[in-house]
Every structure is written in C-alpha cells, then in structure tokens.
Length: 318
Image 1 (cartoon, rainbow, N blue to C red):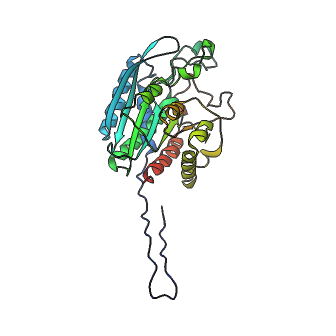
Image 2: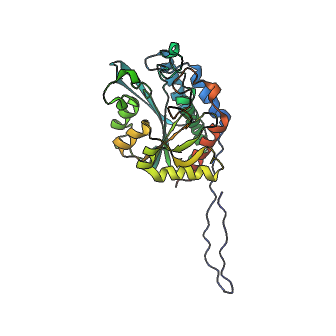
Image 3: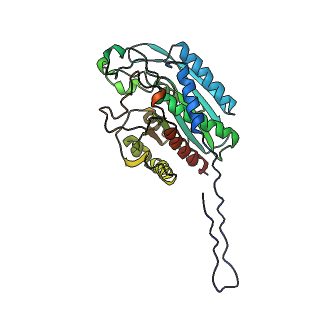
C-alpha cells in the first residue's frame, strides 16, 4: 500500500503541485485454492511422459486455464530422452491480455520424474515420483494466480507456461556426456519454437519446489548472473510483505533448471525460485526424487508466501 503525502509550501500564496500516487490494488491469493490445485494434479498419479496420467492431467490443466479466461495453446511435440526414448511432450501455455506488448513470463514444470533414483531404499528407485512439491506445487500456485487474473486483469500481459518433460534427465549411473541438457526438454523445445514468433517478455520467473514445509529460497546463482535485478525485485517484495523467513537474501547454489534455457536461448532475463536445504546432501529437500514427494510435505503457508509475493510483483508492474 502506498501512502500519499500532500506537498505544501509554507508562507506562500500558491501551493506546489501534488503528485498523486494511486495505491496498487492487488487481488487476494488463496493458499487453500493453490493447495487444492496441487492436490488435483497428484490425484492423477505420477505425471510421467507417455502415460495415461500425463494425458489426463494435460487436459485438466488446459481446461482449467481456459475456464480462468486464458488464451490457451497446447504445444505438442516429440523429444528424445537421454536413453533414446521418444517422449510425447505437451507444453501448456495460457496467455492473459495477449495483445499487450509489455509482458511477464511465469513458468513451472508439470511432469514428474519416472524414477525415484534418490530414494534411500534401493527397492524404490525404479518407481515413479509423485512430484507433489517437485512440479505440482509451482503449477498449483500459478493456477490460483490464473484464477485471480480472470477476476482482475493485470495491467500488463502475462504468459503462464507449464513445461513438460523437464524431469526425465539422465541418472547419475547413465554417465552420458552433456547430461545437463538431458533435462528441461520441453523448455528447450519452446525456447527454440516459442508459441508466438519472436516472443519476448520483460522478465521470467520459474517456480520449482515452492510448497515445502518451512522452505527457504536463496538467491540462485544463475538467476543472479542473468537477472539480478529481477531477483532483487522479488526478494524485496517478499521482505516488504513479511516473508523474509522464506526468501533469504543470501547467495544459494547454481541449479540446472528451466530458467537456464529461457535465459540462454531466448534472452529473456529469468530467475528460479527454488527450495534450498543446507542440511541435505543434494541441496534440496530430503524427499527430492524419492517416493516420499507427496502431499504430506506441501504446506499452505509456503504456498501463500510465494503466491502473495508474485501477485504483488505482477500487479505493481506498469
């Protein structure tokens, strides 16, 4: 909320001109709703490419964005995984105010990993991951934001993208060269073939693992390299809203994630809001890429911290 202070000149006949600053009207954000949208995805089961759950969930995501007033495009293509498997990839794009030149990109991956290869129990390592936090939480937040966009259109254009085939990356045991590029396949495809020719945006924000209990989000190193001003914008907004216990204004690690390819290929300065756990050997939560990535680890307070912060970022853009 902005406070307007009148400017008057003492002992003068005329008064100095007032500069009126209208307070920003930011719609509410419901963590209950974001949690519901996260649960809905998990209810389909693991959203692994080439499965019935993938097809069913894609239909749900597309229809929900349409119901919330977005112009929706399903970008379907075949991509090749590191092991030679052909994956039927479905990127889902929802645009608000599509004719606006000034735009912001919000994105998250919606697929889940086909193997729980980080599970401490070897018997679980060939089982698929449910991906409640790793994927579904970010999509859940963005669906709630889409619901609010329908009720009150932002001043700028906003594109929400749910990227597919992000989490089919090479396992450590595969030992293939350039293994980093085996991740984020749907994002790499979109970056080379955007839904609008020559697409650009002021900046992009990736949500990945944004629902964990007592999660902390540090300044991811690649985000600071490509888009430090955007990181500062988001972290400052979070701090002003009372969420500094989540958004820690300190350097974190560097992560290979969807934002890397958006930055490198499209040139759109993009950041990654991603959970960092200093007590974990991986830097992520202990249930990352295990069968325990379930709804029991998703917390409404964290969803609220991220969602409310992003709503203020979007609605304060002019």
